[in-house]
Image 1: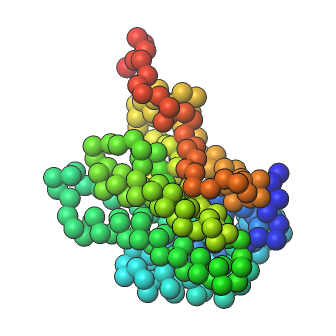
Image 2 (image 1 turned 45 degrees about the vertical axis):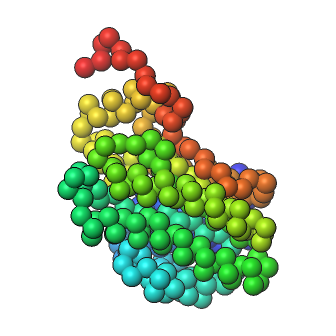
Image 3 (image 1 turned 90 degrees about the vertical axis):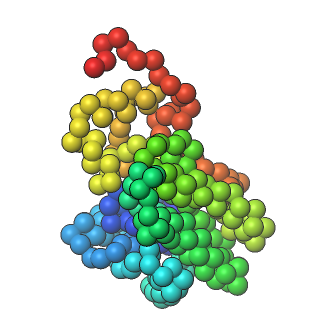
Length: 264
């Protein structure tokens, strides 16, 4: 087990899915955790209980990040440092997929996606970086992207564009912040089971299609993302900067699988 004792992390969008998996993995590794979400729900309480079961501090911070970005970011940042003054890990996980077909895309949908998926992590990282530089803290930032930042889908134009931007943020913020002692990396999940991918459970044919396109043949739970996040934010990754780690069962490595004769 990688040891994150002595560290404190803010994980945005941590009430479910990939964010939940990361928050709970951090707690298992000994880090104190701030769990962020839009509102306090039973799911949030479950995440907090799971984290506290490992003997760490776990608190909830409510907040919207998709509206007027800068005031919302400033508010979350202020409450986070008040709750955990020693916070040195930021995981920008909060995001959304609400795409419409490209020819039907409207400004409100596009803006909402870009505010939450790109602008919020950009400015929240800036706020923490300023604090860390001032206090000479070796901060660690993890951006959560998606395989859709590299592989496009026709009905995901806005989402794909936002996740492509996140991958470039990993690189550009790396070269900006690494000289200041701050590490920036990213993790891009492939298809994993979260509330946003519930179609997997509703449509067995879709699940089989995704399994066919994944070399290891699996569509796992979001828990597979937790260990990768812990590694990237740990001292074991001390010389890893500006990298996007794809946790995708090999999907991004495969141009196109052959269709089995028996597949229907």
